[in-house]
Image (cartoon, rainbow, N blue to C red; front, top):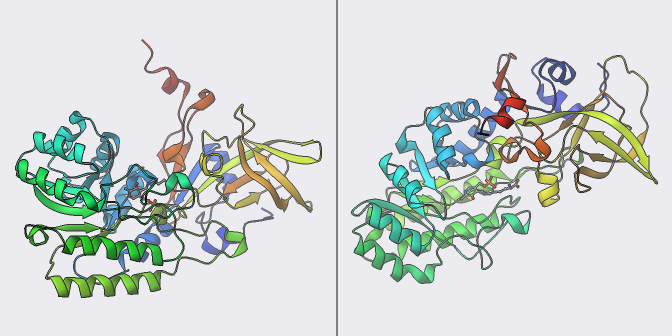
Length: 423
Ligand code: LLP
């Protein structure tokens, strides 16, 4: 098949010897395609950041909760978080035992907390109010507290989760109140966690915030540091979305070296013998996922060329929600061998809103009806944020295994799925 823009996936053999056109034909579009090779590689990148015996990776399941992917992540030795009963259910289905699941959520109902306690999970609370509720439900138990280190980061205001202007965490000036509640309910502070935001491309902010959390751990009253089992620095590790512009990667060697030095020196100084976790979502799963769609219509409105696809924002929300950039590949049908000129094009979906734009004013080879389009780096917060808006059905997901075989890991929704809950 003539490839007019596929050098990135070609170089990785992403589709394992299949063509995207063939996958689109077999499974239909929109279709999420995942590469097991790339998923394992990203898990290993992060598992190898530090050789400190307490170091580990806590995959943040909100980025992608497909149990087939979770199973691979489990095999690679990561643990997982859960932030809802649904994530907990899928983690359990993927074979994670309770001691490998941290319940890191916010603003939970008592029922939700009770269920996490019943399943013997370690729960992180992110407010004094939730700490009191938790204490009432589980007096004498173990608990983690999420602090806000005062340093935020992220690709968009909506995903900065620490600093002054966010709903998350307990500010360190409330330490006395935290300890009063721990005492009141005879709780053991088993862990500290934080998450400064999503998508940083340089290590400094993350490492500064890690140092702030370690300082706080050192200042804990009542000899609490001796009982601490987990210090979790959070996620946010960014990936380069501008693949065709050779955007540099996050310097993991530097980040890992500095993190390792920080935790090694700090454990030696304080005698802490517990675990240090990082909590990435995107870094693990974004690049191993590509969303395939089909060009259904092409037109000029005024002097703007619109390429109409089946990739509405119900399928991939990120561009509409955060103005996020995803690079594109274009795979024409095998019989279409004619040359394509470069044109500025705007790629739209099939949702009835003028904001339903996947990519604005991109200089790309002219797209035509029936081309298959590959949206790169769609594995994180892609399917996880998909919806049934306009009563469109959520897509199927397939996994290209290490040996090149393709497995359907989630069937496409059907009209029955839309009507299942009506009386
Ligand atoms: N830990 C906590 C407590 C979080 O809230 C998050 C993400 C993570 C870890 C993982 O962050 P990551 O490593 O994936 O950056 N929908 C947005 C991202 C929202 C992130 C929400 N929390 C997006 O598509 O960019």
